[in-house]
Image (cartoon, rainbow, N blue to C red; front, top):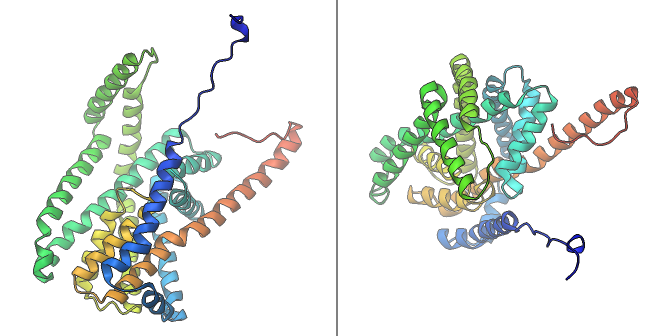
Amino acid sequence: MAPASNVRAPRRRTPPTPWLRYVVAVAAATTLILLAIPAMSGVPWTTIGATLGAVPATGLSVLVLVWAVGLLAHTITLTAALPGLSRRRALTLSLTGSAVSNVLPLGGAAGVALNYRMARTWGYDRNQFAAYTVVTNVWDILAKLALPILALPLLVLTAPAAVTQLLGPVAVATVLLALVAALVLATFLSPKAAHVVGTVAERLATAVLRGCGSQRQVHLHQHMTDLQSGCSRLVRKSWRQLSLGMALYTGTLLLLLWGCLQLTGAGLSPTAVVAGFAIERLLTMPGLTPGGAGVVEVGLSSALLLLGGLPAGVVAGVLLYRALTFGLEIPVGGLGLLAWWWTRRHLTAPAVAETGLATTPAGPA
């Protein structure tokens, strides 16, 4: 038998699960867009392309302007959630996080990690960024859940009979999601709720680790109470600004969808557009594919067709809307990331040179 010192431990290969899921998700999104949309709408791609090609350049420029105004409105929420953050940096966080989330496997986590590194370079600590992440996501979810609740009465009064039959399940699902969101919000506003959740989570994590033979100590209770304290202070101080920014951002997205459908001749009433927009907001929540690609396009188009829209105009309008809210964020966010990287590199290089330290790349903060 060979000496123990010469025996090499077998290499542990990391399973390619994230990349495999990403490939499957991208393939599913591509299939939905290329095959399901024409099959569902009965409109061939040649007709869809001709409808999009007929959109005037002036109208397209106005849509891009509305999209940009929406992003600026969103910075009101972001700067409220991270005090001292400038509008420019808030815009950088928003665009770069969205770009990474839209193109990478586990993109949401990657986007948060990138934004965390950016925030650290600007002087924010871990607790500040954690509170920022929780509060902005909770406000985003609450805004998405509020829309169906507001839109349901409109649908009851105006929707065709085929649509009203679906309102019951949609209402139940929306109320349940709203209750979950309210519970999460209460956890981060109430010290007692945070104490209970943190204690239960810590005991469960400890039990799982012990079951796996690990003696690692976890301190989820302390992290939860610290996070609750930061979120509570933030919400009590800035809830008006948080809500104002989210309301303005949501309103510009609704205006953007209406403008896209108008330019493509979808023939929908304002009430139908509001109802479709509420459904679109819900469809972006599960994250089954990067940025909801494929799922949102098919789901929103189907809803608007049920509400009486003209097939070619509906599909073209939805694709135009998604090209602005999903597609355009990728190159613009990529440019923002490149600018941040270039600025950070050129600002830190002189400081390193003055101290005489070796110019090795800095790791994540």
